[in-house]
Length: 92
Image (cartoon, rainbow, N blue to C red):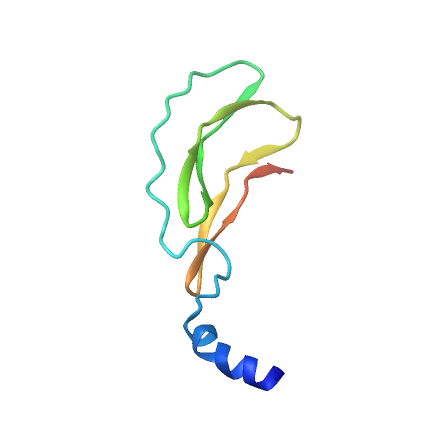
């Protein structure tokens, strides 16, 4: 019975799309955001996130400066057939 079930499902399993990693299309170009200098703060530019193969924009924001650290923005990298996002963060 189990073998019959597996055989009957095999065509649909062969046609199934198994999603691995992030979106298959590259993200759109980043939006231009204008930020004024603000004493004691660093501007963290916006970035695209992805949900269910669709990109959405997250606006930039100010972060309080951290002594002896710098902000490095996130980036999208291509891996085989998809894109993965590496978030930004504070680095020494």
